[in-house]
Every structure is written in structure tokens, then in C-alpha cells.
Amino acid sequence: MKRALKWLAVVVLVLALGVGAVFYVAFGRNRPIVDGQVLAPGVETVKDGFVSAFLLDASPGKVALVDCGNDKQGKALLAALQRRGLSPSAVMAIFLTHGHADHLGGCGLFPDAQVYALQEELPLPVRVTHALRDGEVTGVGLLRVEAFATPGHTPGSAVYFADGVLFFGDSAGGSKDGTLMPAVRLFSKAPGQNAASLRALAARLQPRAQQVRVLAFAHSGPLDGLQPLSRFAAQ
Ligand SMILES: [Zn+2]
Ligand SMILES: [Zn+2]
Image: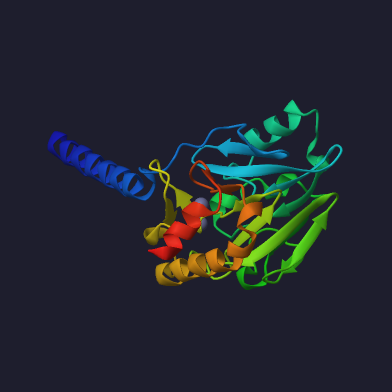
């Protein structure tokens, strides 16, 4: 019996180290996520453990979200709203970068919100009210949100552009050394397609490079300007 327990302990330890190693390989180089970080006027990071969502000013007293975090109870999101004296009904719209569970957790807390996702990502396990097409621009109050199809991490992965910030979801990440990393292979459906999507996005945005102030990622801190994406594309 004691022997069996010993072996069980060894197996659990090896599994734990294995999981730790996988996470280190996947996320170890990431820039840290900082809760409450303001990426541009009207764009705030909400850190929900290992993932982030973003709070965007839409009009006075109204906001939009990019993704809704991992936590079904939405503690971090609700706290961020509360800091502004806002209730969940202030969330007018949610823009989903893709359908992985760590980005959909708190969506059910905002029944009044319009929910947007790319057509190719549907159906999702949460309520989606609008299917978006590549290039589509959505108005939410004073906010304008442009959707870019970047298939690869998932078939309907979207990058959104609003207020000078590009929101990549899991289609890319920011490393500690300031470079843009493609989607984590291990968790991606088609890594080659993801890299091609990032190159195509860089080419599309090059004429508007001046407008791109910040690159925002779901599992890492941000990078400045379009350049990290352009440099990735040039590799
Ligand atoms: Zn994902
Ligand atoms: Zn994710």
C-alpha cells in the first residue's frame, strides 16, 4: 500500500512537471499582463488570471468588451466595471476573438450586450447576436471596431482594430524581448495558416501603419506600434 502511494506520488509529480513544462514552453516568454493597464485613451486591460479581456469606452457610461475572460463569475471584469461605477448593463457589445473557453467565461453575465464573432467561428457555446465578415466595421456608440479574419489558431479567429489598438486574441503574443510571436502551436488548429494570416494582416495594415499604436494580446502584455507585426511578417 505504502509502495503504491509512493508510486502514485511520483506519477502525480511527473504529470505536474509535464504540465508545468508545457505551460512554460507555451507562455514562459510572454510579457506579463498588467491589470488596469491603459493601452490607449479609452482602452483598459482586465487581467483574468492567465488571460486578459479589454474594456473599451463606447459612449458616456457605456463600454464594449473584447472577449470576456476565463472566469464564469467574471470577478475581474465586474471589478473593473465597478471601479467606474458601472453595472453589467453598461456593456453594450462584446467582440469575441475566437471560441476557446478561456475567452468566453464571463459572457453570460452581460445579457444586454450585442455579441459579435466572425461567421467562420460559429456556432459557439455562448449567445452570439451578430456574425461578422472580414473587413466589417461595427459602430458601438462612438466606438468603431473593425474585424479582420486571421484563421489559423481557430478557423474563425478574428483580430479587431479599435482606438488605435489591434486586439489579437490568441492569434499572436508579445514576448519579453519585444518581438511578436505567432499563435502557440500546441493550442492551434493550423499554425502555418496562422503565420500566413499574420503576414497578410501586416500587408493590409502597412498603408495605415501610423494609426496602429498598440498590439494587444490575450495571454501576454502589449507591444507598441505596427512594427513588431511587420518584422514578424518580414521573417
Ligand atoms: Zn485560443
Ligand atoms: Zn486563450
